[in-house]
View 1 (cartoon, rainbow, N blue to C red):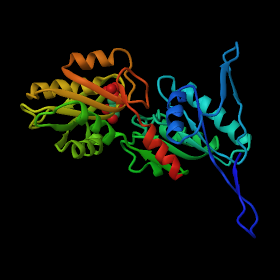
View 2: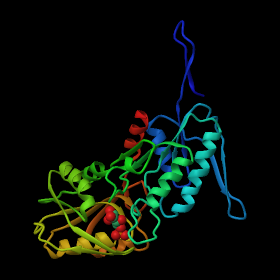
View 3: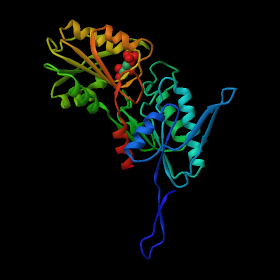
View 4: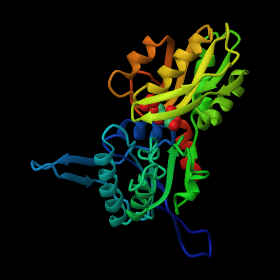
Length: 311
Ligand code: R5P
């Protein structure tokens, strides 16, 4: 129930309270976020009919509540987005005051332009669909926005784009004794994360120049980086096929880097990405739990909970 206040002599005012719901790919993170907020995750039943259609039932009174739906859009993005649309509309239909989409990994953001004639600009389309489903505010973590200057250029609703870069750097700082460290971003966009990590670690930073040749092929331009004999932390937002990190790590090794550590917010790690990264000479890889993986050692539950407190 929403809380009702009635100071002496005034009409009662209903203040919406927060409920947390986890979709199929957000349940664990929803529990961790709810724990930070001293809340319990609301009960949701999600199953499939024999013909493949999804069934959703929310066993909770949502009347006048603010509802955060946690769903990380990784690995089966289309299915998980569709599930989000069903959840969002149902929450609204059950009388919620507003829906806050907590989409820690936001799929489709890399297709933010029409690179070739006739292509769908998927980032903008997905943003529109999420808004049209009834989302009032959106919260994400290190949303990819390479050619988009501000996320508010893509969305009409308020967007809170948190970053996990300082948390990742703190994890590395606590667990690894780096010698003469330098932080390297594998492309221009990663400069923002490399600089934040460098500040936490107390190191300098630089970026490589990357050209994407295909979905799983990248070319990284070599230039002298001053990594000789130094420990390098490569910082990126996403590791998908691992192609970017493998190329970067080979170049850094060739330039005489001592040890290579890798940190990313979203360890999607398709196929044998993690094995290829270790084979390329990296000592250690760390990611966050926006995408559950064997290297998701860092939790984003606290910053997400703090952001929800402020909404
Ligand atoms: C691209 O600009 C991103 O920041 C990542 O570098 C990229 O998505 C990583 O993909 P992959 O692991 O497939 O190279």
